[in-house]
Length: 323
Ligand SMILES: Nc1ncnc2c1ncn2[C@@H]1O[C@H](COP(=O)(O)OP(=O)(O)OP(=O)(O)O)[C@@H](O)[C@H]1O
Ligand SMILES: [Mg+2]
Image: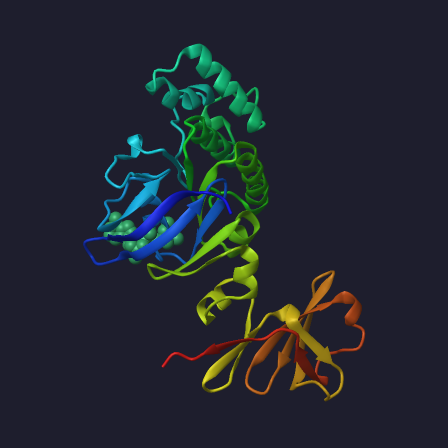
């Protein structure tokens, strides 16, 4: 197990109106991408800004590399933050944007130049030095913004939905890029998103948040396979639920096996079949509700709409109902 880089202990940040986050305990490890995931308003940015020093703590502490940094202003913390947009200074060239923070640190211009060259290489953006932000695409701007942050050699890089303003294709590329940059620099990254697919594809671990609290912390596989409650189960990926009175049974569409006779555990009727290339999505009318199944193309031959079938479930999760 890696070293703990950031220790968040009993953190609360409560705004004047009573919103915020409460009693957050969280360890962030050396060289991991940890993602804060949850719907709008659940407190992701509040935690990130607290780590970066942009939010006053109501209670608790934040320890980085063994030092309590809770009372330090942002510029004195070993952190650097990239926001969703408006990250670069528009009147400065790429080079000037990258050099700015290093100049403040009184680093010689020769060293600045060599550091910037290294980072432009890392970002695969050599040759862009003299361009202004308006002459770059959104993805290129965010890459430079990440470069400017990593040049400061922070202990922890903080990214608040940095790709959400980009279109889908560029967003996918940027995820790959970030993973590559993170592993080359071996840096700890705290990443914020409300996009579960983004979280699963990018993270070593995910923190699922629910209304200012942590619902579950785990690897993407743990969260996907063993969600701790129906909230996490329905937020990550697709999940079917069967209401059994005092409990819910939960299973994923790929865990449904359709049987073309009545020998399966649950009776159903095929309501709708939609082809998606290598698999099909099948909607089944079950006893109580609709069930979604993903069926590989090779298993599609025997079923058609309106057919009476049954199904088995290869993996089932049970959740007691809260009273
Ligand atoms: N400066 C503020 N003053 C008062 N309330 C705030 C402030 N900032 C955030 N909040 C409230 O605190 C809660 C958490 O907000 P936060 O910005 O952390 O959510 P988020 O998870 O980042 O959401 P989003 O996905 O929309 O960015 C919300 O209810 C929000 O309205
Ligand atoms: Mg936010």
